[in-house]
Image: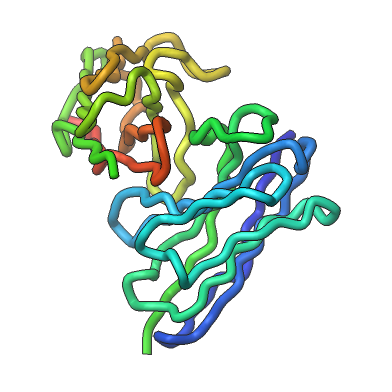
Length: 123
Length: 107
């Protein structure tokens, strides 16, 4: 069955960096676009970034553009989110999520989600 | 960016009730609208895609409708496991945006 398992969260000081990983299994990883979506404590969902199945196309929310990068390793079935210049407002549970169908483009919605990893940015 | 506005932000209901949640987009998104259910401490789960397409395994008491800017999620006969928060999300273009959520709790 499809599984997405995030890791790499933790407590970090403002201005520092953190890299999240999402290990995938149960599907043909290199055929699906993947996203990061976050949720601040007690708040709603906020889309963060997307990367195409082959890793050549990506898009970011304005709130993270220029600070976060998204990448993937289709041999290791792993998605990454490199977060630099972290701010207190980046504190959230970060979910990786899969698109519903294999494609080189995007469907822009999500059929499977990981359990999330908590990032806390605090001095 | 497309703004998604959900209403109400919360509602109280009883088992067996018919519940309706609305979602309005700031511009036409045709039928590129999806609904998710989230329970406390858990990841969201897809309920409805493309405004009215029931996701695999989702009970038929859930239904979606609408097009353009106005959309509705209906739960026909609320069950105990349906008490949760519901989000709409537009998939018309990037940046993807979600509604603020509707919390359904027990009356």
